[in-house]
Amino acid sequence: MEWILKLKFYLFTPEGLQQMILAWGYLVLIGIVFAETGLLVGFFLPGDSLLFVSGFLAGLGHLNLLWLNVTLSLAAIVGDTVGYWIGARAGVAIYGREDTRFFKKRHLLRTKEFYERHGGKTIVLARFVPIVRTFAPVVAGVAQMKYRRFLSFNIFGGIGWVLVMTSLGYHLGSIPWVQRNLEKAVLMVIVLSVLPIVIEYWKSRRRPAGP
Image (tube, rainbow, N blue to C red):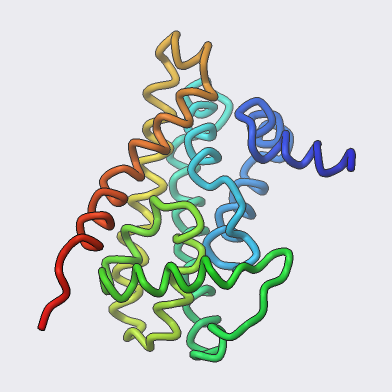
């Protein structure tokens, strides 16, 4: 039980993320970004919070912003590529996979519905939606999206996601209120980044179905 509490602290609190990043550096950042975007079991990992806090630490001089963005963009792109090929190899059979502690079929099916509504741009939009970003490349692989087309969305979305979140942490981190209320700032940034996509999804659900 104690290790679970420690894990929650390091993964889901800004203070814990800072300690983990300062202790393990780029290695833990690359590992988490890759696992969240490339492995089905990584859906619970805190990608947005991690990027924001890493940008914040770069602003304080603990990390190099350029190196941070390059390495994490590559990790995000490679992660989505792995997810795509998991879906392509598994095919539609993956939708019948049973739930486990680290896999929830409902997340996969909701992402499938999201993909069916938004098509290829799901790969870009999903970067800013926790859980959906883990399953989006898998669904694209199952749907047999042409890899060249997928890769263009993947590169654009991966670089955009990393740049937006780390830059926000880097620049907002100089504000005294943010420094005093980092947890609230992280939550606000995540909500604001997801809000436009939630609104678009809500609008699409309300549109009448075509003939």
